[in-house]
Image 1 (cartoon, rainbow, N blue to C red):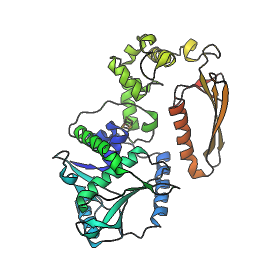
Image 2: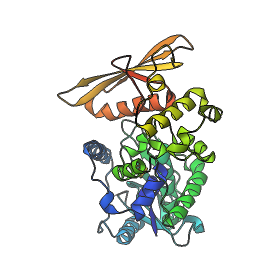
Image 3: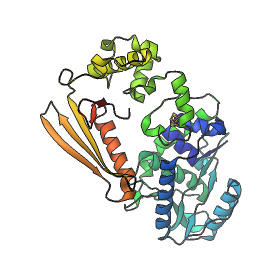
Image 4: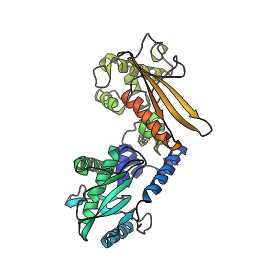
Length: 380
Ligand code: SF4
């Protein structure tokens, strides 16, 4: 089997997604929606802008013939071409380290840039670079950059000194691959093992990663059919792992669970435990439990509350300001946070920053939108 950088990236985002890429029924996969198409078009624009700074050569090969692509790429590297765009690198495992005898690894760095150094062809070597639309050097990008280094080292006979992320509106980010390589190899081995057998990983709907996935409807259908706990607000992957340890894997068991028995689990506490069981009971009986699910402040006031509003430009279809007032009753503070898209193409980053803020920083806080009496959940 060929384990490509794309497949490894999917694995880093969601094990199940990598599995479906290999074993899934392509009929179940959806075409990209408007939002994804917008990201693809923004990425393409960013890519064109970056490429203006590099005089590059593109190896010629049939798109689906990776072996021909690898041969064409290596021929250009052997000639010492300054910069190669969309080259392909194939390796059975670098430095004599073969993780799995049945696997071969394929890296497709956006750019291979020639540097002074040492390779099997002479006194030059190549450094890989990835072009990414985001502004943050996400861990998953850094791990893929490290994977590229690892495969490239086998092809050119030398570990490159650096590997780069070419992010939007940022200086090139130098990935410290030496610090990532052990982690990358461990994950790569786990990825190879998972893909070597057709055992479908359990579905888990996580709004921040499933929203842009081609398999979303398919997975959501399974989750709905099985009443999977990940559909309940507040059941995060970490919390689900703790519930699993207690044998609580179904709506029925969760609704019968005493909230007190969950309170001491990391990331739970009395409030989360009570609400999680309430949610399970409400979903099970298909009716809202008004006394707890929609409590009237201040009877069950949360320690932190978020008041959220949106300013949009309907003609352009753009939300340019996401404003959140964070009311912390413990500290007696009220702090306003504005997430502003000053240009239309910043809308996505603005949304991501807002989402990260409410989900990661204040994941347990209720969000009030427009009317203080109406209470919604983050992502719900
Ligand atoms: S929809 Fe979600 S769970 Fe399903 S493959 Fe995609 S990211 Fe994974």
